[in-house]
Image (tube, rainbow over all chains, first blue to last red; front, side, top):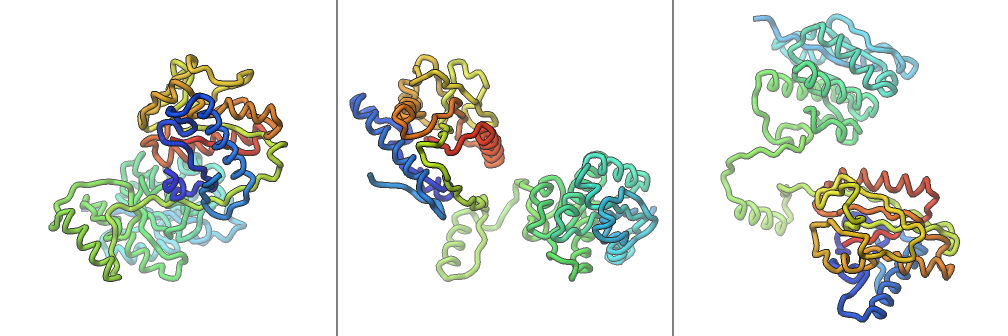
Length: 61
Length: 349
């Protein structure tokens, strides 16, 4: 859904883990799932710290 | 048969009362046409007579719209008009809003057709185009007569009860009305014609206008994360069991504000999910898959963020209208700002 977020003008966008569980993944162990969630939230915090001039998708680790 | 009685509305400037120094003047009525109302009289070409001109200061209307409109309405009604023409307001914002408000009231309360004219960027257009026929004019009065002729022509057709054509053809701003019509070519033929025109670099017009999303400058976070209060917001439909705010499963007009005070995580048995736009099985099993309170609390305890805001805001983002989305977003943002929140993580499905 990130292209939609870009289109409507959201400024800081982080790709998450999917529509039915953006901050989880049922195929992972509970521990790994939480680690995944932590990475996504940390990336969101990183995005908040970053100055942007236009809708920006933060990808990669 | 009595000739069509027309009443015009003008602001203090066009009504020849004066400039900004007269913007506070209340409604008054003069017999016959004044200023641009003379152009209306001319454009009527005998099809009607301007029996009176109502004029009022822009600030008077802007500062107490309801009262001003009620007062003007009484003046208009006393003249028993068959048509009311307001403006044109061109790019003048306060004037445009006054024209729109008066026309809407004249139609709704007196049942009399009313038309106005404005420039595309007049704020009155977005506020009133759904209720009132607003003819598209230039930004300034340079082509007053031409613009007035268009307004009068449209007004006369409304008086005669004629069905108007599409906004682009007739020169008024779209009112958001859908009407069934029979067209010569089917959708496939029109789509192919559009594509070939596009490929040939020729002009073509989409039949589905896309909403216009205004660019909003990205705010900067001036604090360090370690000193910042972060709030969690979601459009993924998280609600406490029983959905106490009655948030709609789709087409939402409401949102909820839910306290997480004293909670280091969200207990799945206390929450539900009413979103009808995705399979919510997994976020019902573990709400953190949607709203990461557990991780945020850890980051708060570690000092990576200053504070986690103790209220989570939630709604359902599915088939939600742009207008309601914008309103809810604005209301939530106002509450967050008042609570001293510095930044938001909004999780979306």
